[in-house]
Image 1 (cartoon, one colour):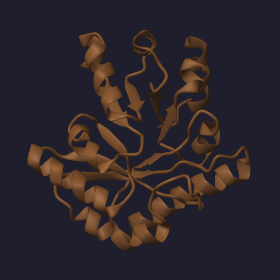
Image 2 (image 1 turned 120 degrees about the vertical axis):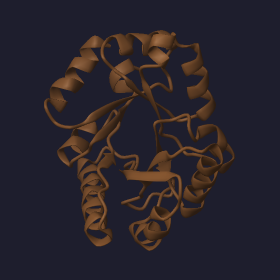
Image 3 (image 1 turned 30 degrees about the vertical axis):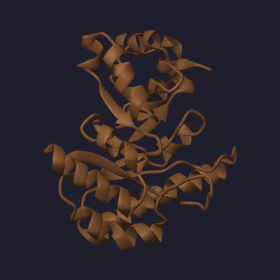
Length: 217
C-alpha cells in the first residue's frame, strides 16, 4: 500500500487534488494502515457499511478522518447519510436534493453535497444532464441546509482515453459555465477513479476516488 500511495502522491505532486480512499473492498486493518500513511479521507458507496466501519475503527482514526458518500444515494437512506458524511458526492436529481435539504433541516445541520452529472450518455449511470442541471440549479441553490460544493461525474465503462478526457473536460467546462452564469463559486470537481484518475487530474479534478489503486485487488 505504501508503494501505491507513493505513486499517486508523486503524480499529484503539488496540485490541489484531494485523495479519497475508497474502502468498499478494504478491511479495517487496511484502513488503519492507510491512515498511518497519511490518508485522512475515505469514501464508501453504502451508508451502512461506512457507519459500521467507522464504529469499528480505533477512535483516533474515526475522529481524525473525513468520510465521503460516493455511491448512489437512495431516498430511504438519506436520513442515515445526512450529518454522517463530510460530503455527499452523488446528489443526482432535484428530488434527492430536496430530500437531503428536508432531512438536514430536521437534524439542524448543513450538509455539503456535490451534484452528479452525466456528461456523456450512459444508461448505466444516474445524474443530471447538462440541460437538467442548468434548469434546476437555481432551485437547488435556494434549498435550505445544504451547501453545493461542486460537481461529480463517473465516466462510461470504457478504456477509451478520448472519452475519459471528453467526460472530465466537459465537467470542468460546465463548472466554469455555471460559476459565470449563476454568479457562484463551485470549487470541487470530484472525478477520477482507479483506471482514469491521471486523465482526471490533467482535466482539473480536485478530488480523486481511488480504491484498487491504493488497496490493491
